[in-house]
Length: 126
Length: 191
Image 1 (cartoon, rainbow over the protein chains, first blue to last red):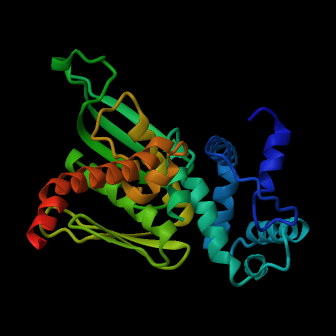
Image 2 (cartoon, rainbow over the protein chains, first blue to last red):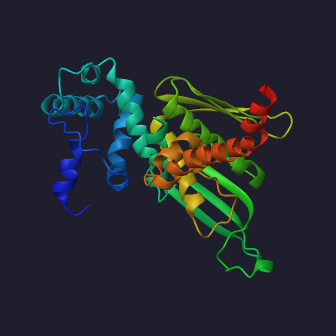
């Protein structure tokens, strides 16, 4: 990854985004994105853990989960193509729960030194 | 003899491994190759401990279960030693069966956060250079088909060579049959 702009451009490969451009992501770029994701989730692990924990006993501590879900939906509305059926599913509060929990869990399992390989395996099997 | 003790921590979970270095292998003093005992402490849950022969199956169970969990809706892992089953999307039921007779199985309920803490502790143990245990490989779960697709630089030669070999072998075979059929002889017979 030469600079931040490259990462920024790569994000547009996501077909769910408003600004979707089909650039065909290269294998090196795919690997680099995974490495960045692993580093980020290692750094954010305490937060990820808090969100997962908050959902486990929602009666006691629902603030963190609600905040996270609200922000998640806000970001999707801002950047994703809202006409897509898949994006609509992500916005539906009852349906997106499983997706969010599984994504967070995947990230939280990939913070070790071999996290890169793990995340790659998870993504391939997805 | 003093035993070595190594601990791995992740948020609410810690894993302690006690053992000795293998001096016959000229190992460092602080290395652990012969594990005599291990303890898994999860805050607010009963202590889990055992011998080396239990550590590997339990680690493997957790790894397989976490893989299933991400891929399936309701994953289940069952073995002689340990059962793990999803109670809901957030809670997992773990049943640890003791190898000693007349000991009731221990049941634990842990959430996603504790499950990921535990697996991260196992990851640290797996990656530690100071402990030599049978390493659990992560790549074995990758299906063959995908492994091929991932080799981004698919060699062009590999694509071209098989059809060429096929065509050449066809030519080679058919050319040998030319000698069996002699049109001149055929004409003589007609006459």
